[in-house]
Image (tube, rainbow over all chains, first blue to last red; front, side, top):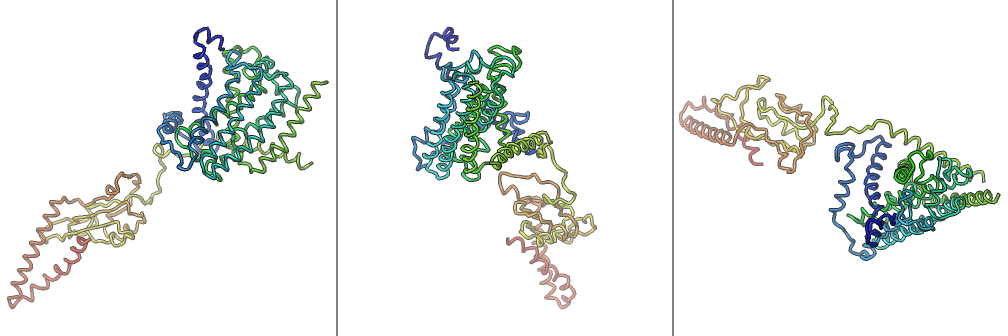
Length: 339
Length: 201
């Protein structure tokens, strides 16, 4: 893609800026839409209506009104907060989730950076989020924030392991870490997708990855870092205005990032499910975004279905269930490949 | 070991059951009533904003006395024998000018205790419940139909009449046959304290 841009703009720096800003063109409208969608889904699952008045049709403009309000709000910094860290934390969190989009292939022709360790980069850079969360919790000088941040650190570090192991199952089948190549290996009808290959190992790995990614994005049922009923709002208790909005944006960006990784590795990414039907780079964007949105909607669905886990249950799920089963998948796929 | 696998199976199964429940609720009609657009019909005897029909009010203070939060304040001025205030719809003759009939609806607790004592059934609770205001003073409703000029007029007339009666009485007292006039004059003095009482508040 950068070759194409370089042919239009002959300034290298301008090309990089455009490439860097391109995912934002998707993330910001997506986050606004997803916030609205989540509220509507939550409401209808509870037999309510949700926002109905802003903008006319089913309150479609509610997110725009919210973001307008957040931009106007006073940016309150607690008197005894660690000012520098408090200021920096939301940006670190957002950078952590945004940087992952650099290596995610939106289509065969649309990828920020087609590096050969793409998957490794995505896993590594999204772990940066925990640093930001810990910064936010520590610098707020608030016991609830710190508790939330520590829980979050414990949770994300534990769930990195089943996540990485589940993804390794696919990497063993594909034999590459390059996300674009992984996509090309799944070209064709949907039974070429890795979920349906070497059944049932990648399928189990897919479930493990999905559960673990819920924990990594701090979504319910793994939202103990921001458990409202215990910790006010967890690590972002002391944030207001645009900084709070950045945490929010980062959460939704993260939701899409893990969904994008799931759809790239297991569900064929930008490949059409029906062979050559609606194929090509332009339809690729459509398929990729719809697969991503599908998982985002499932995350929301789970959020309004399941209650929150206890901390010990959370650790049980990670260390005693997901990790051993992920290992089992790796061993199974290993034997399959050897035979 | 059996328990471990059973737990895993049960957790996956119950998650799916839960997801089915929430998915079905996604399509059940919402119970929300979109209030300003859709309004439920109130029960027949709903107690909301008070209304006073001043045509029927005889200024008897029954509602004022019944009110547990003192939100009704009434002032009356006695009418002259020559004034004709008309009758209420229940046929009672009105004998008092109701110069002030204020209800502080912000204080009102909607108990409805003021309604039954009213001898002419002129105070009642309506089904109006949307009357929010930006200033609390706007919630003091003035039901009296008299203008300030009319109130002043009624007061001056009454005091002039009272003076006239007092001089007549004094003149009658000097005469030997005064005993026939005084019983008629006395109820006027007995009634005046009750009319002047609300003015002190």
